[in-house]
Image: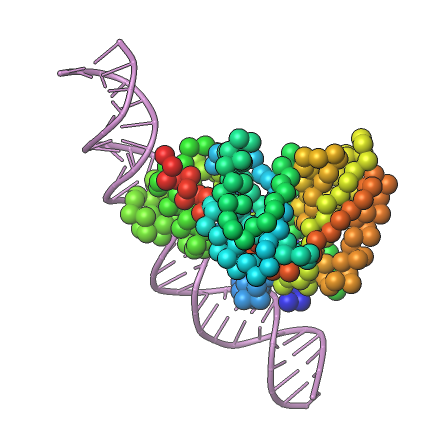
Length: 156
Length: 156
DNA sequence: CTGTCGGCTGGACAATATGCGCAGTGGCTG
DNA sequence: CAGCCACTGCGCATATTGTCCAGCCGACAG
């Protein structure tokens, strides 16, 4: 849970060149291989590093349209709505937020026209009272974590 | 850009057990190692696989609070706002969306109180007219891609 | 029908990385 | 001052990688 400077450098290095092995990392960071291995193990069991899954680009898969939908949920239907949305592959992410029964979800679609189909499928469920959708035009800051890691590593 | 069934299985396997090597994958998938290597190379140069960066959990880093902020931007100030938000480490993601000068950004903070500081820093910039923030309470569907990959692989 | 082509197989090779263990060192703490 | 912990530097057996190759097969154009 506590991240020191070496952990920070390790994470940044790992983010920039994910394919390099433990040995190469130890060389770059100027520490022993065992240290890097131990740090990595610790970061993973800490949960700081959740995994190394491939980052797949939905656009390259044929889903270039991204949108965010705010859903208003009927009281007490939360669990059902969750289960429903889980079954929709185009729902990439779902959050419940403050506010009266609100949820926020990230959607992708094959085209703007296809987005209509996705939205229909999403809101075609009893517990959802209302939905408002915002289509993403640009993504000036793609999901990133490095600046935060650097801040967390420096702040101690 | 076209994903066939083997690609799909490869991506799913890779997502589930990211640490396994090419050789092990070829064994699991029942194909030759060269095939797996070729497919992987293709997926990467296609851009379908963007990378293998570590998935870092902000909560484990000491930032357990997530929020989404909708920002209303003054006409023509978009570029400046983007540049401003890029400098804030707690801004993990930024999108421009349909609507008059709207942006949506994902924030993290050390606590609800700390969120106030982050928001102040975010909106403490000239081009931002108004901001409305929704704090995330639960995350029933964490960012996922596998269902979409499976659909893309099946659909052909 | 026939030739060409791309993708897959199964195998080989040297080079490299991994998992694992161990002794020694230095700093911190009770 | 002793104990503890993290780090170093080393070695070893094993596994994996990168990179070749020849051969097979199905798709496709002529």
